[in-house]
Length: 190
View 1 (cartoon, rainbow, N blue to C red):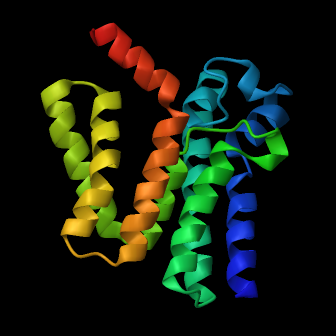
View 2 (cartoon, rainbow, N blue to C red):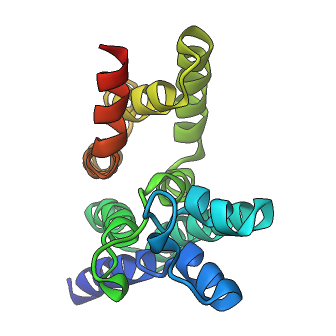
């Protein structure tokens, strides 16, 4: 039980290690959150540092999601703890204690955690995203739809309950982190 609790706390703290913040601070000596969208994620780091900053931040954020899930598996944590670690690493990225609870939006970290949990989840999500993007030509609508449908699909397809439940919680917090973007998109379309 103690190992499981420590794993979840460690997942949150690892999620809070902000690749974009660190890269921008050490190369430009500014807080990436003071520019652009105010996020510490890959897109905003890319606005400041260019493509290399975007890709390096994206990679770092994906890797921390993967590392947490693989570590939980190596420690032979119970499925419930692994699911909780998925949610914790994403929450840590969005609300990092190190940065006064103002981080990124959680997409890249989610992708890493989902890939480590079960890579077929990414195949499902990518397929949905591509199909919806071809129909809507909107990145926000396509990834939002894919994120929203993933927990339902994993449940219908018979994935273990800890996977479907952790995806559902992850989706809720990631969509909440994007509430401003989602509201703006709906306002423009009305």
